[in-house]
Length: 149
Image (tube, rainbow, N blue to C red; front, side, top):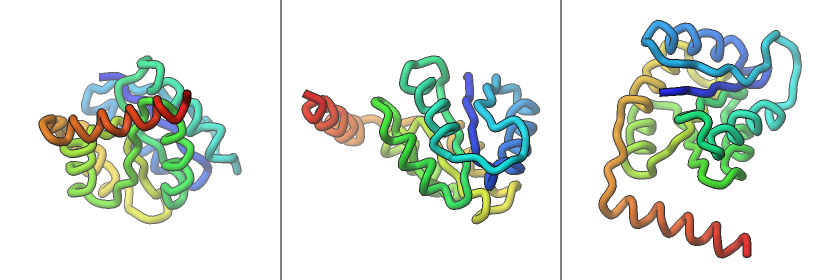
């Protein structure tokens, strides 16, 4: 599985920590930046990862900013991206199981690095439940397509 990851300055240290965890677990990781700790704007980096997810060049995305709210907003502007802001493993599980989320968003100023890795682990290991949830995902996709016309 190819995982894309991006942050702003508030999520930079968490991003580095998670990259180490993912590589140790054997995942292929693409780091969309930033590559040094400096003040940056989250839309610049969130958009890079979301665009790659939208185009199918990566399988999942992990986005990190101070609270996760900004990255959630930018990521969900891209067709086919279903980004879920998760602060607990339970939310990550439900985001995958019920919503087929393909991007997880974390708050670098909200949760500890160890908890972030547990949330990411649950997110990556949980399968989509399908069934009635697939019907709802298809409704969302139809609404988006109809809106674009």
